[in-house]
Every structure is written in structure tokens, then in C-alpha cells.
Length: 195
Ligand SMILES: [Cu+2]
Image: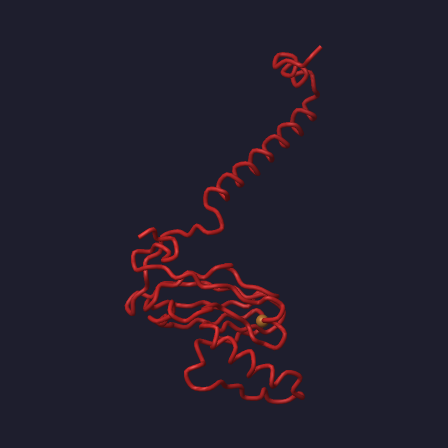
């Protein structure tokens, strides 16, 4: 005989209290996962809460967590010309850095730091890049946090390949880079505008 809603309810009622509790827990867990999926899908990886651009008097806090071999968040929202209070946190076991700039900046640091890879023990060799290629570079030891105020370049969107990358030898090659998403002064991502 095919199962009916009534027979299912009857079977559930006949279970022991412990089995009913386990069944209720499983149902609750499934509902929690379903609710999470609904929220996640509604937001989507491309969604971003509307942000208010930072100013010199009221910088916008931006958290950036580095670890092996990536950053959180996976996309960094910035408004050209805004002032941010950057908190770079190293949650990994290796030293990491956040180089923020266009593709030319990333290439310059990758090349400069590769040149000192495997240096003998002792004082860290000074690493520098040509003028105009520095972007923003923040080096953070494991478990440390560095805070700094930074004015986002107004011409950032014109620099191709603008991203956050770590050029401690080998890290960039491991995929330690995340893109910057440019956001307009109204808090809406520039790339999603329809007009
Ligand atoms: Cu790194």
C-alpha cells in the first residue's frame, strides 16, 4: 500500500521519544542548511552590501585577512579616491604581505622579491621597485595585524589588473591574489551598472 501523509504521521508518532528527537534534529539541520543555501544564493558571490565611501575625516574600515594562500574577503571592494582604514591581519603561519595595485605594480614586486629568494640568514635584504611602481605594500608577520590609513588611487580603475597580491617568493604562484572590485561613490559596483 503506498504511503500516505496519515500513515507517515502515524509511523512518526509510533517512534520512541529518542528516535523522534533524532528525526527532529535531522529535520532541523536540513532546514538550517536549506535556509543557509537560500540566503547564500540570494546574495550570491557577486553581491555586496552597499558601502559608504570613506573620507579623510571618516575613513572606511576595510579588513583584509591573509593566510596560506589566499585572502579574505575573496573580492575587495574599493571606491576610487576614498580613504580607507586598512586592517591587514595575518591569520596564517607564514609571513605574508598585501600589495595593492595594478598589474604593473604586481609584476614589479614579484620580480623584486624573487631576486632575494633564498637569501642567506641575516638582516632581510632591502627590496624596492622602480618609482611609480610601488602601489601599496603591507608586510605582516604571522599572527600580527597592521593598520594604516590609505587613500585609494582615483585612477585605480584605469590600471588594468588592479588586485591584492602577495609576492613573498612562491606565494603569488600558489594563487595568493584576489581582485579589487571598483564601487561608485553611491556604493554600487561600477561593473554592475546598466547605464
Ligand atoms: Cu603570502
